[in-house]
Image 1: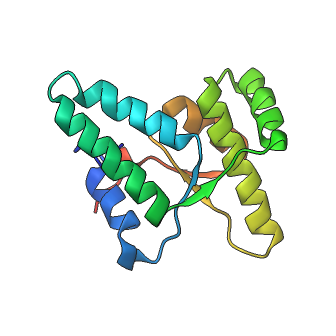
Image 2 (image 1 turned 45 degrees about the vertical axis):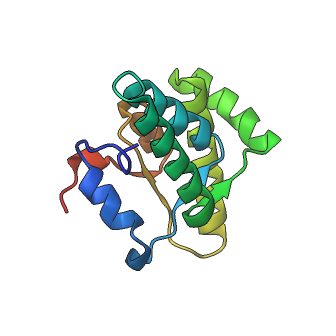
Length: 142
């Protein structure tokens, strides 16, 4: 969202997603639904054409720029447990389960742990309890 709508943390998000940053950005496949829904809900009341164009830009970037992680049955099962344990919304539980699985693969492969980037306070609290590194872009400066 912060890459497509100016709000607290947008400049920082732009800096870490810039192609020259060297960062690899992973997103769960469900992010497509979440972001398009959020963009549409936020932008459509003021300008339906902007909402459509912004959603299209996000979907193009999603396929060209990000590494998409599909939630497998094991991730969905873990998400159910995380939703119960941390009282998370469904998509947040899936995001967290995806991040935890990806992080475990990174660490097992000898890579540094990944960082979850989110401004959702409940998701961030659960992710920290699960041992993930978390950055809230709204608290970052460029």
